[in-house]
Image (cartoon, rainbow, N blue to C red; front, side, top):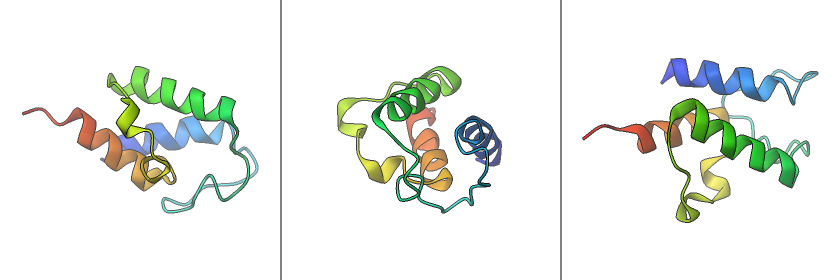
Length: 80
């Protein structure tokens, strides 16, 4: 999970250049997020982690923080 956090943090740092995000800091509450960024985030997750973000996954609770994003990725990429 730490490796996923590093990848997610690197991606987010391109958008939050002047702010170092904490693992539990709400990226939506910071006010930097718009609909274009949200789509870029979804595309990044799908490409980087080779997963599909389904319509039922489109809940802010999955994407608010680095920890929640990493947990979402773990959940979507668990091999049975």
